[in-house]
Length: 352
Ligand SMILES: NC(=O)c1ccc[n+]([C@@H]2O[C@H](COP(=O)([O-])OP(=O)(O)OC[C@H]3O[C@@H](n4cnc5c(N)ncnc54)[C@H](O)[C@@H]3O)[C@@H](O)[C@H]2O)c1
Ligand SMILES: [Mg+2]
Image: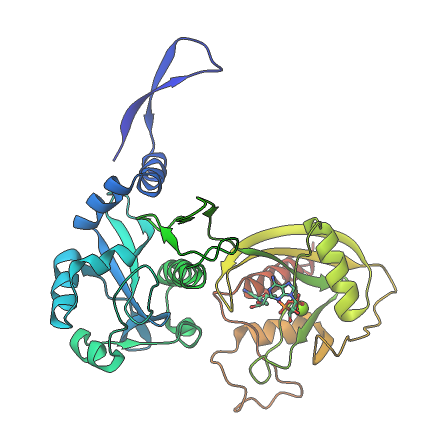
């Protein structure tokens, strides 16, 4: 889909007509949906709805994968009717994206009670029977979701959680009301606007040139090691946060830092993960683990990490390596950082 649009260049009075790309028209449409309640309400007529129950998405198992079912407006109205609720409840849904053909996608939680809505939580098991699926904890479904579905569900869960936790104004104590899209909430008494937020988190794969540093927290699944991560403090740049976190958690000073990529991560609250590669100062590789933050940290060789990357599954029970360990799932940006490091190392060790 594309459209022609007049564009004024640098404030000059002439217009230049060009074809807008599908991506641009989609972005403008999403902007419109967030800004205009009527447009958003209209988009629900032809939209698709992803269902949640107490922040767990509705999934249907299919072999080793999970499918993510969607309902259209009519199906959703019928479902609500069966459980004695009217279509007004659909106004609790939040916009999570749209297709290139401008089909808008929404998420609705039928298990959460909303202050602005008179609707009670619907019974989970009866809903599951009716919908021929299960509401599965998102963390548990991580290994069975494809990247597109997981990204959409991450957004949906984060937005639904944010609305659930921001039903009252922190200044007046009065209820806040969401706009149709769910891109903001407004206090009914003082008109303060609240926008959904993400906490910036740095995640760093530290290398000494030949090995990389991986660590685990007490809360990690058995055997899992990951890159060092930490929340940015108020006032810090990304560079400051990376240097501080590495010093704080493993007692090392960094020499070089390189940005790699970023990712939205919904667990346990919405974070913007900012991923970097870093190297330590030569000869300064002795780790001093901060046991208040980490259970263990160690240097791992290229061979060890490359072997761990090839390992399948989520359990180390059957492994018989001298130091078996697991790496984060493919969807996690920590996995991507580790994979990049292995690939770079493999290239640099090729004979000329
Ligand atoms: N996607 C990935 O690949 C990946 C990998 C590792 C960690 N993570 C995420 O990164 C996040 C941060 O990692 P960490 O736990 O090592 O952080 P951390 O090292 O900063 O330690 C967590 C502690 O920081 C404090 N803290 C400061 N600001 C906070 C805030 N805004 N929210 C919560 N706690 C705050 C709390 O005391 C908390 O216990 C975790 O939520 C984790 O889920 C994601
Ligand atoms: Mg940490």
